[in-house]
Image (cartoon, rainbow, N blue to C red; front, top):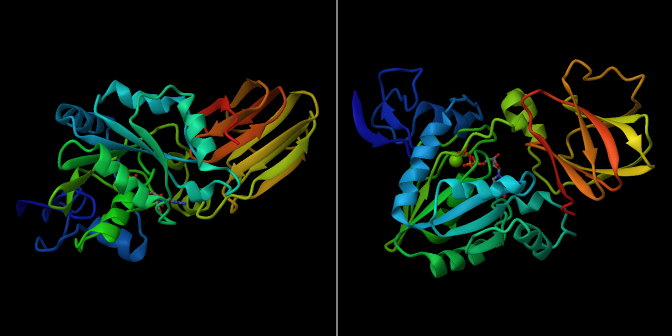
Length: 335
Ligand SMILES: Nc1nc2c(ncn2[C@@H]2O[C@H](COP(=O)(O)OP(=O)(O)OP(=O)(O)O)[C@@H](O)[C@H]2O)c(=O)[nH]1
Ligand SMILES: [Mg+2]
């Protein structure tokens, strides 16, 4: 039987006809689909590939509304492309830098905000939050009230940045609503728009994330995902490094120091990932992966999308070995 009821976890239309399609449930009376049930109760993940066309269609609808938008970005993983949201929507935007808890406490919020302002963002405001630590959520709520122009507020951003986690926090802190959105470390957890009425004058709308094909989480198996996604404050690892040495991060990423002065590489990646240093000519690890060379300027970060970043102090020529699809890019040093 098909009906109009949607899964309160992921937004898919509930159906009891095809087990391999989204929204399947054995009992149409249920509030959540089997996929959400298994994610919530057993931590079993089933990836559903979403096309970004659907995401863009949703953004086009958002654009028509002129409602306030919360644009969520992952602290560990952003570059200048955060401005690309403007290609799709002209709404008022609050930029929400989430997962603040994974960056070292010594980095001040103001420094992060100043850094973001260098991108010439055309946003109403910027706020740094952590859903896990319930950090700055009241401040975010105050901002929402200040800038919203209607009842509806949309939450958008790349997949896995914590959109649904943030809405769950808002539900918990400010509403009587009993349901909970499904969250997971996998990409494309939320499958369709979900409206949650927090109060008579505030409805918050979750959306599926844009799948960022350059993110390493698309290319590792489930068991590794938990290791890659840092759950605690990152303890940076600094290596005084010389030409001829290489660093290998968790069998996923390798960086060879090919040319430059004595240098310092500081790694900001999950504490659960092992990092090893080798003589690059004797090390064969990850040599089967494609190699890309980067000429790095002074005081830059090399960002490995989804994994973290390496702060490189002096000019350097490096060779990087990683899965071909993973986006690796340079930016001004964040820290
Ligand atoms: N460390 C940390 N992890 C977070 C935080 N917020 C969310 N996460 C984690 O990020 C992952 C993704 O969270 P979701 O809320 O499912 O992200 P989403 O943006 O809704 O993802 P999609 O629905 O796939 O687009 C989960 O593993 C969360 O536990 C945070 O404040 N700190
Ligand atoms: Mg979600």
